[in-house]
Length: 212
Image 1 (cartoon, helix red, strand yellow):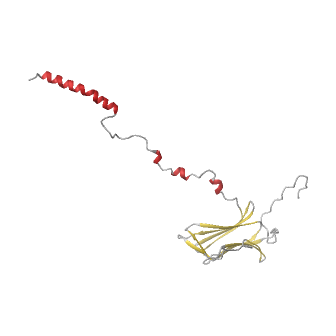
Image 2: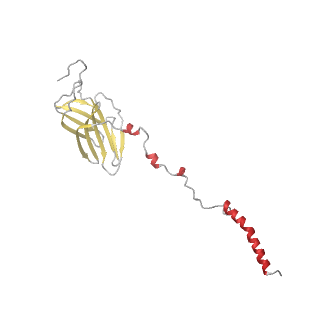
Image 3: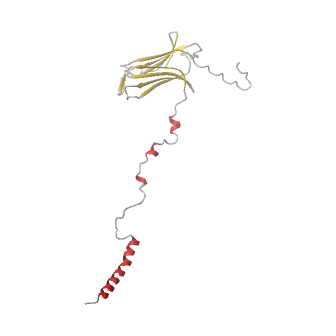
């Protein structure tokens, strides 16, 4: 039998010979083939909802409505529909607009018997001076528009402020009508005693006397 001291010496040699390999494994990352990852997440797979929701350049300008100065307006409810009728001054004259809103909690089917869906008129002393439908021809076929709950649609027509003969409407008050013409629910809105704002005189040309 070998003395105890010899066994202790052999064990020490074995332990010392294994340390370099263990240190090398620690430095090289060996021993664990699937370590826990601490890398930053892959940003390419993240949603880009914020970027997608931003409007493209120029969208705001394209979506802008023309500036309106309201001259006269009225509003009324008729069953599930709300009507707002306005006459506004715009850059190239005047604009009639009829905004139809479904105030119910369900969608509505609005049916027309032809393309004649609405009409705006200017009347004085029971005489029609101007109509948005004058000289127009309409499709003679039924059509249906679906108007969702709380949704609106707008009908509009431009007017140059002149009567049928091409003369200015003048300063005397007049009445304007808006007629919505669905088969199942017709409505007429009226605004009386309407006058147009005075148009400022155009500046005189150089060398010409200005109007007083």
